[in-house]
Image 1 (cartoon, rainbow, N blue to C red):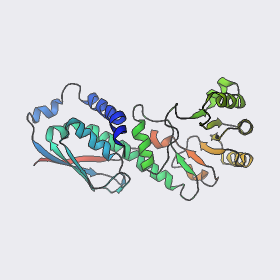
Image 2 (tube, rainbow, N blue to C red; image 1 turned 30 degrees about the vertical axis):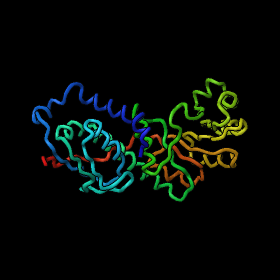
Image 3 (tube, rainbow, N blue to C red; image 1 turned 90 degrees about the horizontal axis):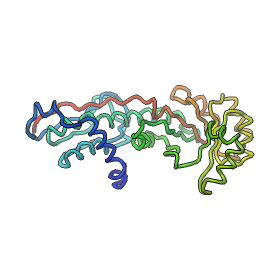
Image 4 (cartoon, rainbow, N blue to C red; image 1 turned 90 degrees about the vertical axis):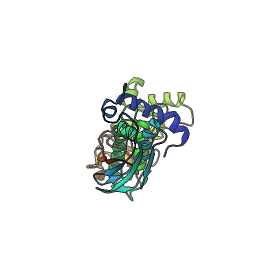
Length: 284
């Protein structure tokens, strides 16, 4: 759940922007059939099994339009929900319920979809000691929601943004002139409290990263045998992350390697939405 400061400073402006995108001047459809306010209630129904995520954001959409709207969830974020389950009831001005419906569902479906997919991937690493991480491959202006959803689903967050940590990728290394040069320059520039992670693609780069004193070595798009060889060489001298097209379908192949972290962009860029719907709107 977002604390009040985060909600007001970071979340509310994004929700208001989404509402502004959907209502540029007025909700013509709603105003056509509902020229005056009337109290009503609508039900949030789950249409497939999954993990709920985004209840607070869903509620905020309606209360930002009208603070008098009441949203009652019967389960919270992280709960397993089933097809046909009544998840919540929303009561308020029918015009608000109609105008906020799509934006609220867009957030809830997307966030629940990410949490659901993440939970399935995380389950494949149970008992391995390896931590599942997300990446920065998020939808622009929705990172705060998507990374939160990963946590709800049982994953962990990698760095939040470019200001959050040093990660020297292939193009940084190319710009610096090599792995050793890149790590040396990062150590001289970055605050001492920052860990330095370097992405490597070959065994020679692994050796350079260890010799340069990298804190974390990311093994990118390496085969199972190549990762095993790299792990034996690193031998605890750095933490190890594995990355590169990791999905629910192939992560199990990596689970026996004993790496510290496995990162997957698919958690956020390829998770399907969880189907939820507002139904049975009626006056009360």
